[in-house]
Length: 388
Ligand SMILES: [Zn+2]
Image 1: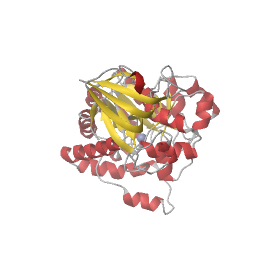
Image 2: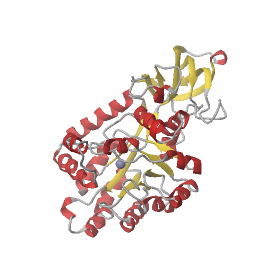
Image 3: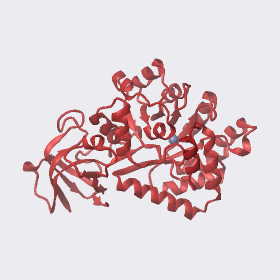
């Protein structure tokens, strides 16, 4: 069953060979969806015959967002902590332990319902691919349970037993690293694709992070790293050295860090929701882009430091405060996220790609930054099915 979406004012394909500029923009465009895939894209006047047709009414169409960094298996919230921080207290990694206590106390059903609610919230806002992590269990059973629940809802599941040192190991961080790289890893690896570590002062140092990531690699997991969020540190260099798919945050970078990212296949994933929610300095996307690094944008959706599921909001922040053009920000939120997950079937609207797309109540993707905070996403199709 094929369906043509016609009368698209402006189509973002993310394939420069199909249209104008890096976004491969096509004006007066049509997209043909066949099953769960894109079968054809081009101008409406050249669209092939199809079983069904949908008139986009002169709206813009772009790929569904690829949110390559979130923490959605959790319970409870941290409203009080946010409120206190906005009243002047600074953010440290320790607040995670509040969510750990609530998550351990929750039932499987409560955790799954919360995950579903947040995934649906993201879908309504145009996000069709979501990576999510463990990291609020910090025991073998609780981490494995988080990953099992996540894996029922997305293929992009990340083992983050090394989020912070579990409270039971406060006086024995080496013992916790041994657990994370031993029994916990054995239990978690079958449910995950990625291994991650919070490489930061107050969490894990460079040597510990290397031990954790390489142990994950021996179990077939591919590294991604929480790096250089709160200050300078070894995270970015370690990510590049180990061939991580992504170094995430990248807020405090030396010139050597920028060079390392630019000369590697490691994507720099920027998470402006975290800087917004902690009143921290913005990551400098312009510096990374000018150096030639691949940049992704993601929400970091989590109850402590970035409780937004809105990729459109992140685009607006990136354009306003991080030196990105609207085109660059939209690319980073779609194709960039796909690159950070090493996916070629999402984040683009090209023949053979998954039919994951969004229709905006706007004539152009530029409106995502031009009209911040406005719910512009009118329809979302995932795997060829209209879900919103
Ligand atoms: Zn994170």
